[in-house]
Image 1 (cartoon, one colour):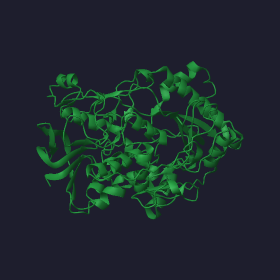
Image 2 (tube, rainbow, N blue to C red):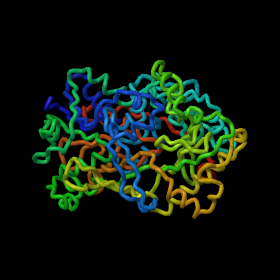
Image 3 (tube, helix red, strand yellow):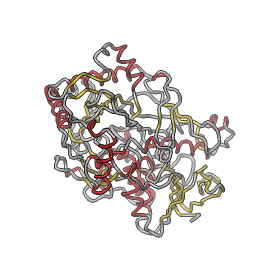
Image 4 (cartoon, rainbow, N blue to C red):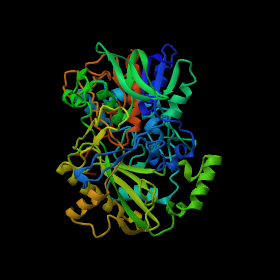
Length: 554
């Protein structure tokens, strides 16, 4: 297929959902352009192996940030999926919708039609939710969508100790942070089904590829071809040859918050002065392309465990082989979970209306690259502020489509970032010091007991803060009259006809939590817009807001 009604660049979280929905009624031909290869194999499909694919050049674009001044000049890796399913095939499989107020903020900032009441029906449409016997809010959840959302077994007593400790510290509990009440401690949700990673490739794309009107081409998308102000196709490279794939109706970029702004700029859509630097003819001068880059940073607070009950006992060749064999043959056991099975969403201080801190709890002290703490048995909390005021940018290094863009997050560039992070670390220590952890608590591995003053904590943050890998915002959605908006509330690129962006690039502001869920939702909602369908009826269910939010943090 060298032409189609719709040409979608990228098969990730939004792209796969979009391809499935646009091809659903059989009336339109859809072509997906994907650079990466197959997602087959245990490193991707086994949930517990999550640290591997995001560190494998086969599956990851291998991006890294520029030296970050706020982090002592460190370059942080920025994994993005270079594989069928995009980043949904290499992520940590944590499922978070985001808080209702996140989407209300989108609508208030110019993304009309994207309030929580507008997006909740799409979350319900995409979800097939399983409570796993851990409670929840069935009325708030979808039960028949393609996206299976489940919960781990939570057999390890440390998962329950973490939740109990939160309660002892005076915080709320929640049985479903994706339901009415995000705030509090409770079970974490994962995109895992029958022991396998449930990526958007598995949920949407592969079933849809059986249709005669949907096809996928492996290639490098070089630029959008724009003639007389209209997107008419995509210039691609495959097998060493450059050709043009034509789009009869629309070109849709779903290439990630890193590659989408790069493609826009290579196509002549972006800040005019920056494009001129690289000898690119300006089609639409949009100052916001590549700007507004946001991410979540986190630190791992690690505690030694006095009982041999952590995952460390499996962290050897024999243990991994055993877990791998059980998963291979039965899709059960340790291999069938991402091991993030308890979570918390908290508010940092009185006067904050809804949570701005996220916790992932893990019953092992380990780094994201899969290197276990030398101390042996331990547990850890990943913690970080959710709404950093810092903003970065994605810019071109050159006009060469094969060259990675320049990524600069500008992490920790405001005083507020430091205040918020210090609080996160001290709060975690408070939670770990509760009676629920008394049977298990050994010494603090990191930051370590000696790290107490603001300066000492700041030095620890500077050296150890890691990205949670949630980049977004680089083609912001807003009013067509907003000079920094890139797309309008229908996801149409302002100033170019028949071109849309449908991925996490369009987020006006980062959502509360992991971004896979909201990215899929964007694909779902945009599909109705593209097909000219009326949006699903608004759902006016009111989220729980802590009645003490003005006077207390808990």
